[in-house]
Amino acid sequence: MVMRTTPWPMLVLSLFLLASAGCGNAGDPWGETTGKKRIVTSIVPLHCFTALIAGDDADVRCLLTTKGPHDFQPSAHDARLLSGADLFIVNGLGLEEFLDGLVRSAGNRRMKLIKAGDRIPAALLKQADGSPHYHGDKLVSHKGTDPHVWLGVPQAICQIEAIRDALCDLDPQHAAGYRERAEALMTRLKKIQADNQDLGTTGGGLVTFHNSFQYFGDSYNIPIVGSIRGLKGELIGEAELVEQANDFRKKGVRLIGVEPQYPKQVAQNLARSMGGDVVVVDLDPIETGPQVRDREFYVEPEWYFQRLEANLSNIRHAARQVQPRGRP
Image (cartoon, rainbow, N blue to C red; front, side, top):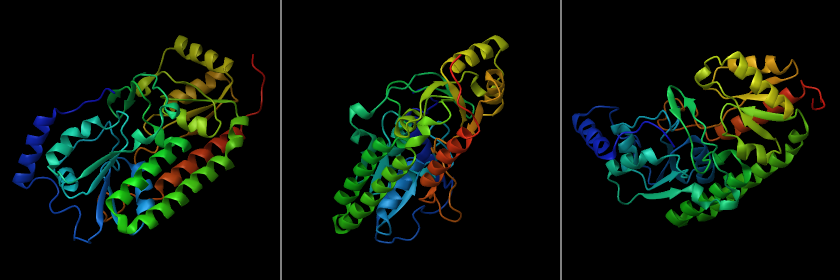
């Protein structure tokens, strides 16, 4: 993965100086001690899974809420959050390597680190295509394993199992509740998957701006047949536009997925070049979410499911707007 990072020794020193000078947000991000175990997750999907499994038995916070892994800039306040944590749950699979320095700067030797992605069998993992794409103003690429595993049902279930076991090990007193809620969560995901298997028979193939929806496509029987060129929303040349349009038309593409960080203009131009029966659809990779007002480092636990259902609904609605056609 390519991203702008700060060498960890420099990061440790910077955060130490910030904390010593009283810079950043003041106070303990955990607030008053509740006696509950304190859990931090790296990204929003893991936060939602963990908070729904924990219920009222643990205090769960999210380090990256409105900022994704490619845009995150650590602060002394973030280090304070980790310094008070009992458990830190990350995705792994190369997504959060930039957090190593922050973990060191927190100086919390009692905090356990769990990489939920490590629970996923190799047979369920996919390779990233390595193509560069923009997150904000950063040009990044994923090499090796595709880390967007929370978008796939079998992969997310493996992560839920890892989170459940980590909570049970940390807090055996509430293990029964953790197991019960995790089972309900996995059942919920399986039902959503079963209820949407017909999506693969409507609308033809789907292309996106970068290949982050592989697991999602497999889970809901939606063929992901490629990714769009035209990074950072810049207009691509007419010849390249026609080349892409012809390629996707031959593959039966009917839907073009657009993520929140990308402008729709490139997709709309491509759709027009392919023909009027191609529809642009909004898709959310669910990496980020809105922080709850007056509750620091916290996202509404239902956010993941709200966005997942929205993705599926958007695809279903878009597929109804296109008519079956034969390949040219």
